[in-house]
Length: 177
Image 1: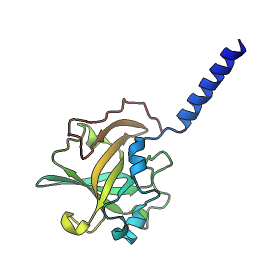
Image 2: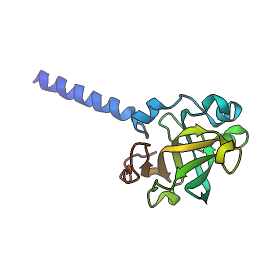
Image 3: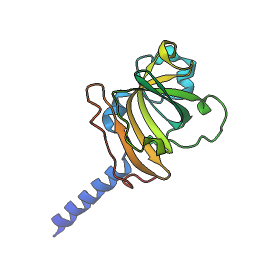
Image 4: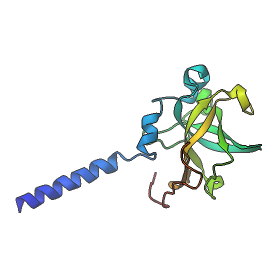
């Protein structure tokens, strides 16, 4: 009897530990990304991050189709420890700035992406002088998760070695905020 109770308690503690450490991003993207990169650090030293993978949050405020690319203009939102974007405490300064996401036409975003209230973006930093609509930081899309008001709705995943048909979908209500 004691053995069963100990096993049950061990299992419950393991579940509690796992649920407390959940993240809104797959672990492989967190491991690939430079840690603690902010929009401020990208703007201060763009060359230091060129070609590196970073994670930012934001709100898509505009889109532009340009040949073989969709450009998403994003207003930055700070990320919490679970990589969920939130409104900044102060709406001024570099962290309240903007950046661009470059999405190749070969990538099909989930059908309801325009309804996302916020996004968490994993992207590779590129030189904004090469093709961007402005001089703001540019991320080539690697992974993007969309958030509706108060919950995760759907996410779209894109990896360079994976076709556009491989989209990650998160069941509605799985991740609460």
